[in-house]
Image (cartoon, rainbow, N blue to C red):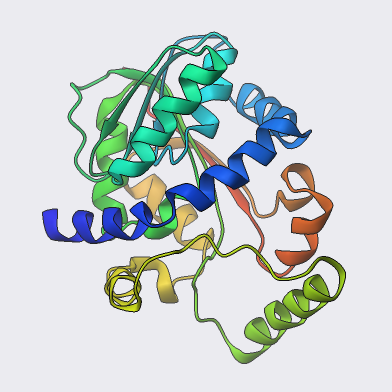
Amino acid sequence: MQRQAETIGKRWDYCAKGYDAIVQNEFAGEVAEKWSGLLKEHAPCEKGSVLDIGTGPGFFAVLMGQMGWKVTGIDCSGKMVETASENAKKAGVSAEFYQMDNHQLDFPDESFDYIICRNVTWILYDPLRALEEWKRVLKPGGRVLYFDANWHMTGDEAYREAIKRDEEEYRRLYGEPENTYTGDADTDEEFDKVLYFKEVLRPEWDEIHLPELGYEKIQVIPRVNEQVYSEEKKLLYRSIPMFLVRADKPEE
C-alpha cells in the first residue's frame, strides 16, 4: 500500500507548479465564488471541522477557511502540501496540512464534520478502502462531498472521438491545453498502472458502492461543468462530465 501511495505522490510532485498556476487563476476570477457557493450549499452545518483530501495547492482549503471553518488538508504529494501551506498563508487562512495517504488517515475516529475533495477519487488505488476510511473519521451525521470526472478513462471509440473533437476546437480558439505534468515518462507510466478507475464508469460505481459501505442520504449530480468551469474549460471538458457525489455517515 505504501508503494502505491509513493507512486501517486511522486507523480503529483511533478504537477505542483502547474496546478498552482491554475489555482491562482481560479482565485483571481469568478470560479472561486462558484466553488464556494457549492461547498456552502452542500455543507452539513454552517461551520465546523473540514478535511480537504487531496488538497493539491489548497484551493478548497483556502475557500473553506475564508468561510470560517477549521481546516485540515492532506495530500500524498509533499510538494503539493508545501504549496497549499504557502497559499493559505498568503490568503490569511489558518489551516493545517499533512502529507498522507488518502487510504490510511492518521486521524482519530469521528474527527471531522465535513470531508471534501476535487479531482481526487479518480487516482485512488483502492477506493473501497479509502471511502471506508473517510467514513471512519467523519462524525456521526457528517458528510463527504466530492467532485470528479472519468479522467484517464479509456472509454469506447465514440467517447475518445468526442474528447478529441473538443480538444481540436479548443486549440483553434484558445491554443494548446494546459499540461501540468513536468516529470519523466516512467513515473507517469507507473502512476497509470495503479489507477483503479481507468476502465470503470462513474458515477454509476459510486451509486452502487456507497450504500454498501454504510453511507446514507446519497445524492449524485452527473454533470456540474456549467456551474464550475470557465467558458474555455466548458469547451475543453464538454465530453468529460464533472459529477458531484454527496453522502452522509449515519447518525448514531
